[in-house]
Length: 177
Ligand code: URA
Image (tube, rainbow, N blue to C red; front, side, top):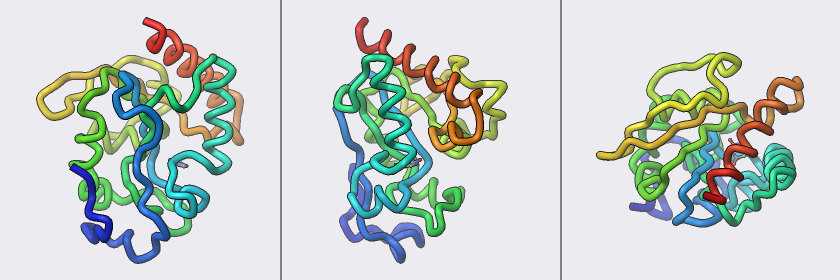
């Protein structure tokens, strides 16, 4: 199930240039889920192509992973104005599309607090839970859920960088299984 090209299920349609749909391999066993598109993504219509995306792709490349090997998507498909966090109501409106995108994945990596909150249904403290396996119910299946730092957090400290490196190495191992 994909959103209608003129989707107006929440208010984010008012400011969008493009709806940002998943990129990479839709059949990958590993999915990366961010919060929502930023301005570069809104312009390109592709997730994680701006500054955070470049940081993320560099860390993945260092672990030997290319973005084409993963399903890369966001909790909401349209840019929240001013790069604010998506609201719960906006995430709920987009949730059926996200569940459909994730229907073939075995491992879902949540990037940042707000994507993790949307997926898990509760808030987490990233420094406590990063890279700890959890279980996530998607439709009628349980998948492995790995919470981790948002790449934007790498600008503020080494903990996020180290945490994301651990995630990238785990993703590399999972893809080579
Ligand atoms: N941050 C996100 O969470 N998603 C993107 O696509 C880009 C930046």
